[in-house]
Image (cartoon, rainbow, N blue to C red):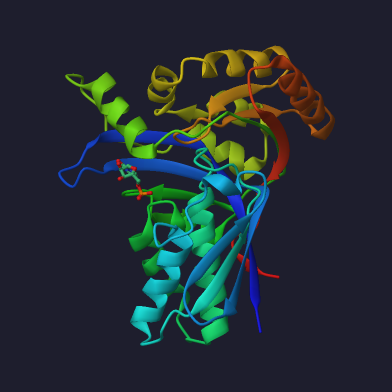
Length: 297
Ligand code: C5P
């Protein structure tokens, strides 16, 4: 018997970053929006814990216990006195190390899949607590939709979304390390007064009403200057998408994937075509949001 879970990518429509905390993390006002690019994680009983991965970027995915999906299985098994003898297969479509929470998505999916396979009877709150231990973005991958994350980003409040948003994602060559981008944020803001992060009322309103035009004006990412500092060529990608008619452009999370908001599905296809031909990215993908969280298929 196997269990397969489908799990979405995310874009941060607002990522407000505070000063570094004593534990090294940063307080955030992190507005997550799940987007319809999905990984699928299948767990099957096996003699030992093993991980395999398929998809165009599979070679970049670790297959040992450094894989967050394996760590999720181990964490759940430990709590329930189970041996985590499962084969985890990740069918990967979310860009790797791209700022779209692909690794976090796989962890949330593996957790939901193992929970079903082992019939642990864990509550949703217990699963969310394990997610938060695994990483700041993992709880959101479980719940999907849209949510404001405070603290490290793991303390979630769901946001109702009143419409559909059309996105284009330009996938860069190679990834960016999230700790390195936060480190660059600290370097760029050293000696300045970094304000406490707060969710933007205009942005939350845009999500509630489903207004693409208002959302376009309210998008923001405090990590963008740091990502651009580490990867200056991303400025060319952002300019190419804006030139192709995107209503707004920003770096997705810690990057290097860049996100472009489009007026409708047709505009998104056009912008993606232009980006693919621009030579400023490896490929471009269209996707809509919001998308559901980790779901058994
Ligand atoms: O929580 P997660 O393991 O995904 O975080 C990866 C890294 O990103 C952390 O080690 C830290 O460097 C940085 N980070 C941070 N503040 C946050 C979330 C992540 O500094 N709120």
